[in-house]
Length: 192
Image (cartoon, rainbow, N blue to C red; front, top):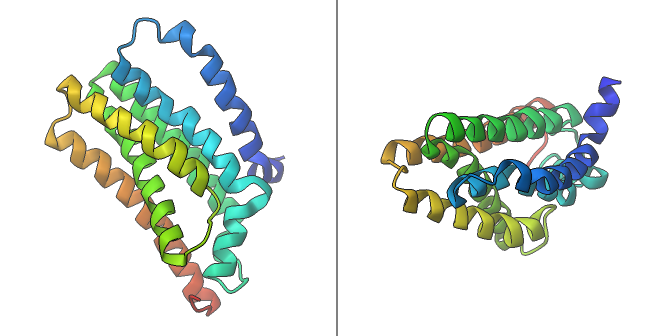
């Protein structure tokens, strides 16, 4: 069963995004706009993940581009990156923003924005589409940008919260790159 979850998590996430969006009016009635936008990072990310990971697109893209066809990014790694690494981080960000301080919402917001910018930078560098680019540009950047502006406007976004959010997002993305480079070194592949 775990193999099926690791292989097909993205489809459950895509459907869960619509469930979360559909239920949103019932539990966000009393929330301010900034907190709603913090929450939206999770279902928006789940929608993005379908474009990125349907039919194992992103993993195959990275393995072809960087691994020369070798498995430098495994299905298990993709699962861990996206389920605990994206859903879990967003869950923690939303809980902390709701229960402690809205500034913690910057963790999820920066995760979305940095990922969107990475997709855009990769497309510009390679001069081609990469899996997830369309939703990164048309969902991540505007929704993340509006959320960032709303949290800043709320007055709770101290420098510390910005550093925490940005630092978390950069650290997660660097960990992914590090994992791929470690596997690349172990397989003896060269980046194309």
